[in-house]
Structure formats: C-alpha cells, structure tokens
Amino acid sequence: MAADIPIIDAHIHLYPESEIPTLAWCTPDDPLAKQHSLEEYKAATEGSTPKGFIFLETDRKNDLAAGEKDGSGWKYPLMEVSWLKRIITGQPKPGEGHAEDDTSLCVAYIPWAPLPSGVAAMEKYIDLVKQEAGESWPKVRGFRYLLQDKPNGTMLQDNFIDSLKLLGRMGLVFDLGVDQNTRGRAQLEEVVEMIDRAHEGVPEDQKVTFIINHMCKPDLSIYNVQTSPSFIAWRTAIFTLSKCRRTYMKLSGGFSQMPASLWRRSPEDIFDAISPWLSVILAAFGASRIMFASDWPVCTVGFGDDDNAWVKWKRIVDRLCWMASFEDEEKRMIWGGTALRAYGIEA
Image (cartoon, rainbow, N blue to C red):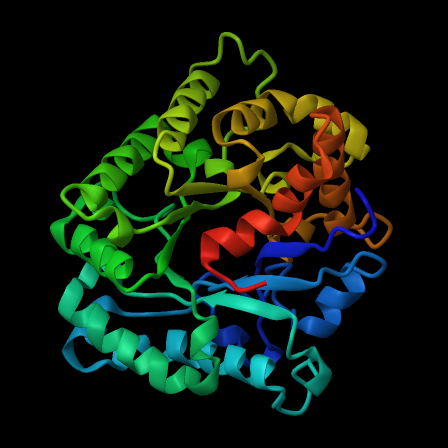
C-alpha cells in the first residue's frame, strides 16, 4: 500500500488486567487472560501503527433481567465505557498501559447494549452510557449485542427489532457479530430477515446501519468451494446482505476460522487459500463498503513471538488490494475511508 494512506483499524479490543474478571468469556487459562492495552497494541503494530482504531465491546458480564429491573445487570458494560473514557481523555490509572499522548488513537467506540430488552430499557441504558462517557460520548458511534452465541430467534424478537429502529433514529450503528461456521445457514437467514424488519416502514434517513463483523465467520477450512453447501450458503447470504446499501463488511476475523496448518503459512499462501471468500466479499460490497479490521488481540491466539498476526493480516489485505488492481482512492476506502463513512466519523 502507498505509504501516505492512513490506516484506521476498524475492530480491536482492549482491556486492563484489573478488569479481566469482568470478561464473560475469559478463564484463567485463556491465552488472552492478560492485559491488552495500548502499550501492547502499539508494540504489535510497530512500523505500521494505525492513525486510529475503533474499539469494540469485549463481551463483559451482564444480566439482562437485572438490568431491566434496576440497572445492576449493566455494571460491567458501563465499567468498560469508563475504561474507554480514560483512554480518550488521557487519564490512565497506574499500570493500565496507556498514556496521555494516546488520546487521539481511539476514533470511535462501540459499547455493549441490551437490545433484547426493548426500547424503554435501551433508552435508560443509553442515558447511563452518556453519563459514564462524559466528554467522550461523541465518540460512541453505535452499539453491539453479540449474537453469534445466542439462541435462534433472538435477533427476530420484537424487542430486538424495536431496539434496532431506536438506534437508527438516534443515528447510531449496530455492529453485527454472527458465526456461520458454528451456527450454520440458519443464523445468516435470520440476519437477512432481521435487517428487512428493522428497515421496514422506516424513513431512509432513520434506517439503522449494520456493520458486519468478521465476514460472518465462514468456514475457511473448506477445500472444494464449488460443491460445499456451507460455502454456497455463505455466498448467497453475502450477496443478499450486500443489496441493502446500509450494510458494510469488515475484512477481519479470518485466522480464527482457519486450521492452524493454514494460518501458520505465508500471507501469500493464506491469501491464495481464502481468495474465494475475499472475491465474493469484494464483488458483493465493493471497496466503498468493506474495511480493514484486525480483531486484535483475538487474531493473535496461537501465534508465537516470531509470527506477528496483525502484520500478517495486513499483508493479506495488502495483497487483496494489489490483486484487485485498486486505485489509490479505493485503497483509501479499504484502509480507513469506509470505516470513517460507515461510523459517521469526522476525518
């Protein structure tokens, strides 16, 4: 890529060691059970450190019912908002791994939100986020409620759809995390229906924008894509999702969907192996609706000190831009422009 094209990493996670016990998924033996803050991120991206990044919520412990009752179930997601405020305002606690001069790096953040609880609870929760975020509130550009591991039908409940419509009225995006590899075709079919219902009868300027995480997590171990029902179902869903112009796709999350025998190989070999999926995304969304995103530090799981996951994924996206013969303007969109546009961030 051209050296003068700035990078916005559209999907990273950060957390201080002191708050690891609040992560819903993290056990003591998890390889990510250690501090991942800006010191670690800047070390991982040294030589290509992005101009900025977008923080995604890290699935903190929560209780929907308790949140609806008295707000107590939202304690840890709100603690995460406070953590981001400290990063953005340059007010680190001792040992948190960020500094006063890091304030400009976070260009936006996407907290957790209780979308299944409905509009009344969402309005109450968003007010609490505003209070907790303080002067960092303008950098809250949307919310996420991770759907990949939730029961079938969760995203199609009336409360969920109404919450999506609320986000649209407020000019906030919804980050969509689903998992075709684990959950199969049915979850992607639900996504298509969810988007249709969230936009039905809504004025164009109030329709919520969906930013799709990790290519919908396809199975990147498939060898013969021409006859694979999984690949064909994924491809069909991707083209269907792209028909809605308020959908965007993150080029991220690839390593976690590959066998180790593949992600240990060179970026060139990996690109060749996953090019069927990348080609579909490019054909469906185009450079103006896809964005580079690393999924750091999740992308590092399994990698050794001599194999930098962030750099390797960047080289794969570099190769995509080269193979597609992108002009500089198209490259600018993939490396940052699309993210700025999709999230409504002022450059």
